[in-house]
Amino acid sequence: MYITILILALVSYETSQVWMYDALAMITIVIILTLLYKPLHINHAILTFCFIAIMFHMLGLFGFYSSEPLGLRYDHYVHFFGGLAVCMIAYNYLERYHSNKKFKNIHRPAVIILSILVAMGLGGIVEMTEYVGWYVYGEGEGLFMMGAGDYEGPSASPREWINSSLDQIFNTFGAIFAAILMSIKVRYFHKIESFR
Image (tube, rainbow, N blue to C red; front, side, top):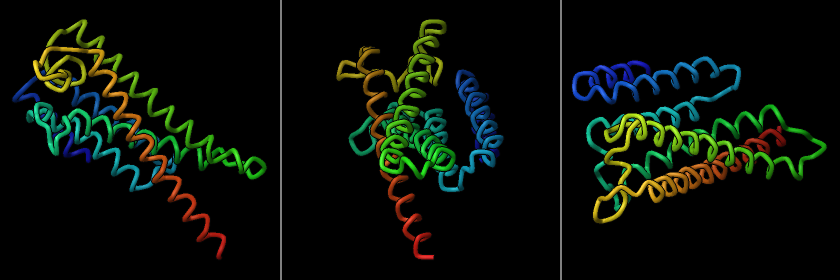
C-alpha cells in the first residue's frame, strides 16, 4: 500500500504537481491508519477497503475524473468507496468498544446510525476542503481544487451545490452499504460464537 501511494506521489510530481498535495494527504491518511490499525483492531478487509478508496481517488491523476464508467461519474465511485471505508472503520470501532449487553436492543441500531453519521460528517469535511481549496487556489485537479470531477450537467458548467450534494449522497450510499455489510458480518459471527 505504501509503495503504491509513494509511486503515485512520484508520478504526480512528474506529471501534475497539483496532485502532490493529494498524494501527501493520502500518505498522511495511510500513516494515520497504520498508527490506529492495532488500537482500533482494524482488520485486513477494512484496511483493504480503505486502500481501494484511496486508490480510487489517486487514479484521478490519470484523468479518471473525466470519465463515466457504467454510466456514473467517476467522482461518484470515489465518494461511494470513501463513505464505505469510513463507515466500516466507525462501525468496527463502535461495535467492538461500545457493545453493552444491557442495551442490546438499541445498541445495533445506534451503532448503524452513528457510523453512517461519522462517514457523512467526514464527507462534509472533504466537501468543505474542496470549497476552501477552490476559493484559495481556483480551478485545477485533485482534492484541493475544483476540476473535472466537480462539474455537473451537460453544459459542463460548474455547479458547486449540485456537485457537493451528489458527493454527499454517494458518501451516504457507501456508508449505508457498509453498515449493512458490517451488520451482516457481526450477526453472522455472533451466531457462530453462540454455537461454540
